[in-house]
Length: 113
Length: 113
Image (cartoon, rainbow over all chains, first blue to last red; front, side, top):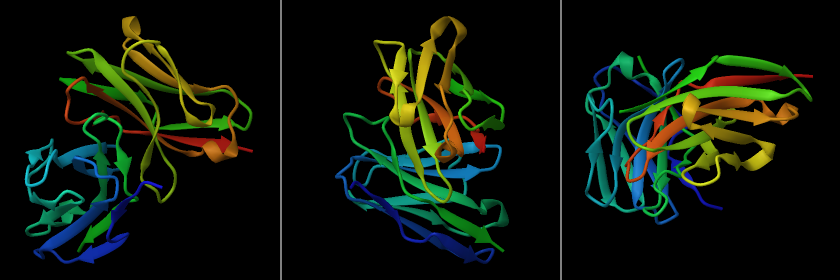
């Protein structure tokens, strides 16, 4: 069964901490995405990557960065966490031929105190 | 520019009743349209998609949706609701060559026994 795995289901951090969210996919997909999900706002794209070492800003990149050193792994970094970054973070991947068919991880609920 | 609007953040139906979840889109290019479903504590999974061709598309678990260009709509239906259909449903729009999807704010479906 295909899988997108996010390293933590729940995470609690303090304001100002550097936070790493990790995502690994086992489908050899070229494209990987980070979304945040907030009630009433749906999913908003933070960053995406269509190849190793490539990255593109999504709709809300401010306060975030990403890293993609290997094809299967896409990391989201909060350089200095703030309370307004408390959210559910969803990682997704897709293949180049079917880039719109996203496979999602089960999410990381991040609380910044 | 692309966007979707989902009418109704919460919908309740009785078990066995018709399910109708509404989605209207805006797109400056021929749209690709999607419905994703999110069960509790899980990531999103693809229910169905429209890219080109037949405007009535069938998905998993008995769901279907019809692309109506004149109404800029892509409503999701199921003839008879089942308890296991209780979830949050997201409509999304993309396009040929697009790198990402734009998601709606979601509709939470409750099924009443």
